Picture (tube, rainbow, N blue to C red):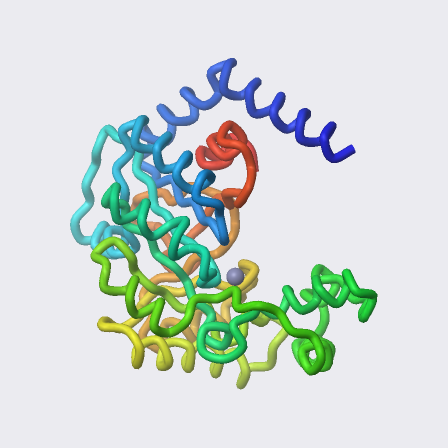
Length: 292
Ligand SMILES: [Zn+2]
């Protein structure tokens, strides 16, 4: 079944490529002065490198969040494919699989880091759930836990954390410091504990948004001004707190291109998700929004 699904996905991706959908999408994106906004989590070296090489071969120009901020005062039109790359969570493997490629090719990459895994346990909450499910310690699935009030999710996660151990998945503080000095790596906030913000009460949302910036600002050479919503979930409440607390830009997970115009909403920036282990042809389709 799995092999059949993979074969079918390959066929769909190849169909889009061979029948010109990719070329047409690329031309349309350039003509409309839009930015291809893509995000990764924990890609393999091959996945990330193949995507970057494809973009380089297609003569892409790479933007950072700062370019979007300055766009409104200084609009620039180019006849090239514009691309903005973000990465969520702060996975330790990003150090080997993303940072050297970004550095070598001079590609700006913004990594959004959740600070609790960085500083404390090193594990993301959903990894405890995955292990618990595998060992039969819980029947609660990750999608289910994303729908319940945060208190309830936390009590289940904390109970499992009391006896399940997982290896470090997040970067350490020292590792984060070492990559933050690169001119191509920018760090943004991704809350303290990676909750679903829309399932949290007002006080907790404020704490998650404000303190994650405080923690990162104390570690990093420059203050953090960008944010990505965990799981892409946000409301007007989260945007207001971000705006009042020193953030200038925030990324959602809504699939879409960023349209460079005066109406661009800097706190609801869309992104296309690139799958960590999908074959290149599928990810090409995803990057250009032909398939998402
Ligand atoms: Zn995340």
